[in-house]
Length: 138
Image 1 (tube, rainbow, N blue to C red):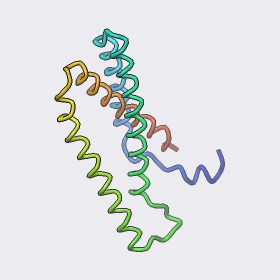
Image 2 (image 1 turned 120 degrees about the horizontal axis):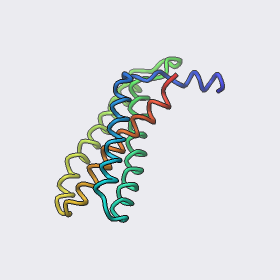
Image 3 (image 1 turned 90 degrees about the vertical axis):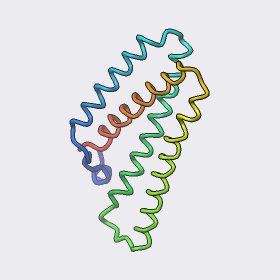
């Protein structure tokens, strides 16, 4: 690993207990999906949605992490700091809107789709946390 890459790497901001919790939640949700999703189509929906959620949550985590931890080598002006705070607030607001509107959208579908979405969400967020840990550990 190059020296520049080591400088860009930062320490994982949360405790390892959070990672262990994410690993256990991932394993349990995958076992639950394997046991309860009988049709191949439902399982493929589960895998696809999980992959999409891992990508989205990981991008959001990385973006929030870099907004929260600005680079120390550059002096930020006050306006840049305010713009970053506004961007973070807008992203958080967008995530909240999606989180609130998603159950309303899913209410139109059958319970199996609800179950697939819930298990995919749990797996996706947990796997994203594990990947985030692997990326940010020293």
